[in-house]
Image (cartoon, rainbow, N blue to C red; front, side):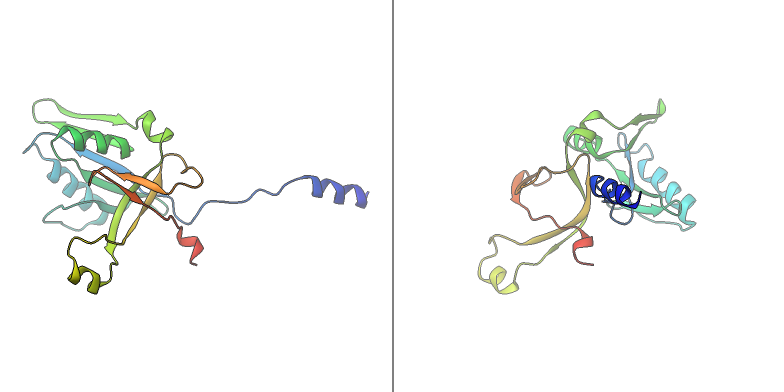
Length: 179
């Protein structure tokens, strides 16, 4: 009986937990024409979750809404290119119109079939001497964020940066490789 159990264990491949730490935040995009209350809505949501008053909203705002749940609020600019980009990354889109009220849209199919990175912050690590010699030199930039959608294909070496409209060489590392 013991020999049979050993043979069976050798036949089964153990499962590997590939999850790394915390899941990425749930992205909520607030979109609408100017002066309808997008920033006010985000400020109110921040106050609801954090009990702190925020005077101005700039960029991405991430709040903790539970033990393992974070929400990231994004105010979408009022141009078609930004709207398309925001729709690609949004888990939930809140459309505000002063005459109609709120509309909510769930995520798009595009998000689950394409890999993309939602960037939280970036750092320019180009040596200062090189920048002083040539202000327009190629820069080395480290981008921190979350990979969303599907996995990147093995061997991916380039990625298109929509905001800058250029293709960049990449090297991808997870924090678990350094811990």
